[in-house]
Image (cartoon, rainbow, N blue to C red; front, side, top):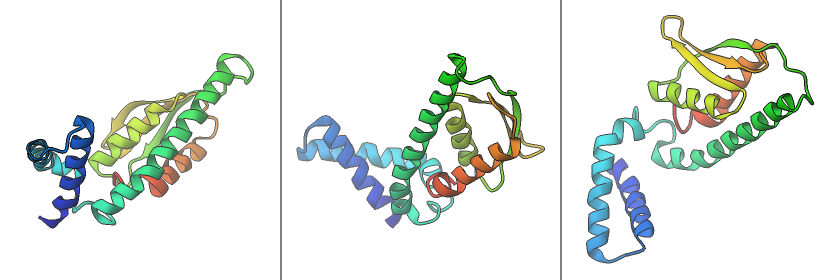
Length: 163
């Protein structure tokens, strides 16, 4: 029960800031709404005991995660722009199998979303039997480097927030 207190307070504070009101009735309604969200979404928000470092660790790890996603989107946009403007030749595009590894269901979904956000990559499918995500890449000349990049991103940024 103690691990719900900090998220409840933070969500209520966000509600009050968005509403622009700190009247007691508004704070009470915000607490009720926040409590309902936490109750119904706790498997997604805090899977497996809130992950390594607890809720606070996930909140702290979220900011580097967002920064890394923004960097990947910027790099992907730049690479696709160069290919589109014929400043760089189109490499050998293709599908690369990225191992799921230790990712939870939420972790797989977030990894797929992050890969698809970056231009030049898109999730094609998930092969649960082989335990891989199939991602189409604009330049798949070195599939091992792409796998290493995805695994490095997961270990450095995502695992702490979305295991």
